Length: 228
Image 1 (tube, rainbow, N blue to C red):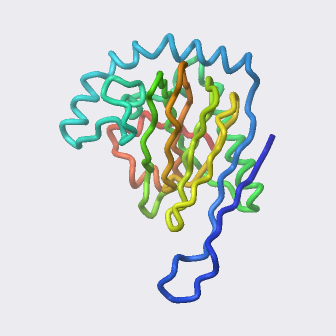
Image 2: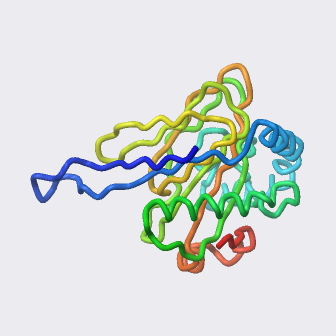
Image 3: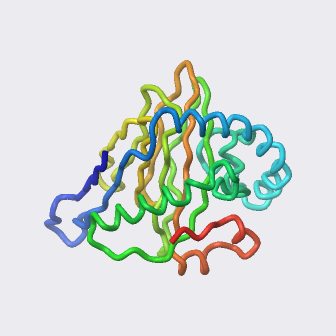
């Protein structure tokens, strides 16, 4: 499955109306249930180890910048809260995702008939349990903003919801196991509440080489991996 979704506002009738410029979300299927279950087990094994390993780093960043959990609402003991401090592409068991994300990025820009550029990735995992949900948030809004994405690993009857910044219309993308989604990193998004079981996803940010060099602080550049 490959799907390119286009969003466009109505043609403005005044100078001050929202611009017509379109934006796009891209979705495709990466792998099957067997592979997803394999990744699920890896993430659950690593979850507590990562949370504990980067506890002091998290507390330091929270104290300096009030970063908390990336505005997701999942709390300071969540795996999501440790997302700035590690990269799944550096783990042997999940390093294969580098080529998967790279190929999806290439497929996205190919569908748009634009040229791919040198790109860096920061990749982390989210584990959500009963009654948890990710609050509405976005990842980046400056001039170097590029792409964000997530991969559904273990989920049942939930959606990730993307919000048009002008009309507030919502595109609800069904969380299907093995599906990857790419979207502009300024697009606000949130999830449904989890009921009765785990929801496990892999999330990532992509930046161009220029954005990486300008916006990523030197002391955390080593967390990012060049993928193209």
